[in-house]
Image (tube, rainbow, N blue to C red; front, side, top):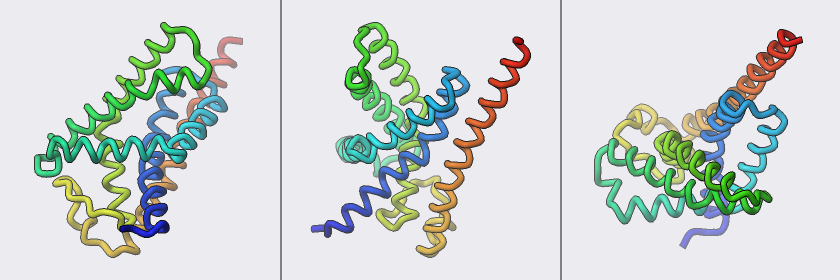
Length: 197
């Protein structure tokens, strides 16, 4: 049986892997597709990260592992793994979205339905990247070796220190990308305001 400190470490690694991948993705969606105010998107990303760390990320990861085992995904090709991640993320997002909207205070059934459908589409688009991000995060932080065929062997053979430095770089890169998305959105929003006056 794993020690408590090992389980906590794995929990943080898995959830951070998800947050690192989805934060810029949803920041771009909220900023450029929904034209959401930057401060609202920032709060949504903080809230989203928070609920992942409070258990939703673990529910996602454990459900994904269960589904992978059920369908024997690890014994199959990279394409099958990607298809699995797309399908799993779509179904998970569609299942969780209605409850998320209700807890957030939404009462209009059509908003809940359309929000859930939109979330499922986003889940489909982001399924393969988030699944890959979880597997890479686990490998980089010495939780579980990444056995995906597309995972570079040079990275798989890197030292633990090198992998952890890359993980830190990916975290910082995610933060920098998210900040750049917000700056770009604010720049164009300011330009549009000036032009319209």
